[in-house]
Image 1 (cartoon, helix red, strand yellow):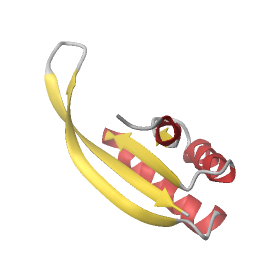
Image 2 (spheres, rainbow, N blue to C red):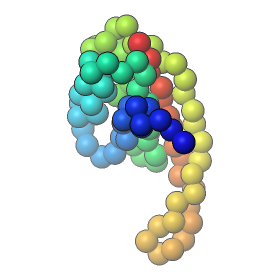
Image 3 (cartoon, rainbow, N blue to C red):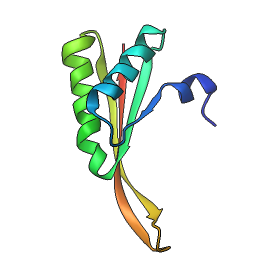
Length: 94
């Protein structure tokens, strides 16, 4: 079980513009978080990498990449067929 504090520090990247997620990450760090996880699946993976790089290089120069996890998740689509989707988790820390 993940502690409640850790659960709040997870940013799920989807179809919105990258700056929306950058703002969410910066807000987490400014509110006292020491670690933030950026998670994405499928086509959003490149957007998640962009978010991490923008935060690291433009907004918070003290933030470092602690760990990157990649994997595959099995997802059931609307036709009840299972497909494999790539996933990434990027952990940023102060």
